[in-house]
Image (cartoon, rainbow, N blue to C red):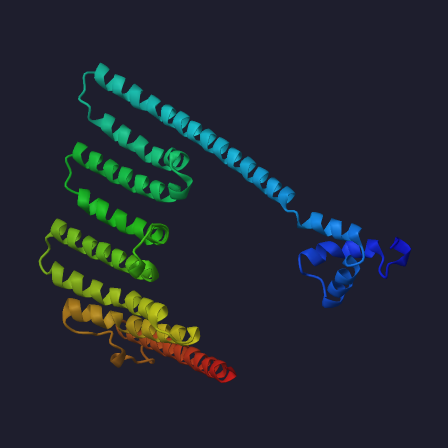
Length: 334
């Protein structure tokens, strides 16, 4: 059967063959192509060529090989840069060592220079030489360790007793920003996979109390432990309640936001009274002493606390009502 006797033009069918091969053409086009293929060997040969994925597989393999070779080249280049950087950092170490020995001094401040350069290396050499998958974790670990080492060397050099007083708050401050990243990237047992936020909260809480303990042993002030632990525990309750509501309460997000607003408002409005009770045994700034006709101390504190409480509760109630309404509509829609 010649081309003029065919029901459909080969050029049109050949334009449709790629769509037919990928099963993305319409049913009408599919039927037309199949009908034409029964009577046209040349178009059937073209379809068979399209089905032959050898060329695509070969191109994919070639692409992967090129990418892998490029990745290896970049790793070698990065590793070389890291070695060069480490070598450059060794120059001031050697110079300081020679100078220190030449003037007959003990190796005291030399170790401070060495620890300082280790701190620099943790941010410059470690990211370059560590495996790409673990570069972030290695950098954080190296930076934290070298910073602790630097504080230890300085403390020993000046014969101080403030090492833990400096290290514990430093680790706590770093943890606030870096611990979420660390917990997200390190492998955890299956039972802890869905509780990474809880691990971060526990870690930060432990280090916060560690600060209170270290400060207590450092100051040895009478009555410190009761005051510090009670005020800290009250303040810790605020983020813990909000975290538990947001993370584990299975309700509409607006309801969780509303409950959190109420919690923050309640705790914030009472904090002055709680602190005064702990410190002085009486609460002059209690919200019960609010008087909006008097804005002098301590009544003004009570007035502000009442305003915070009203604003927070009002916002929370509105958010919860919106959440309940949206959740009710969603339930009925199902």
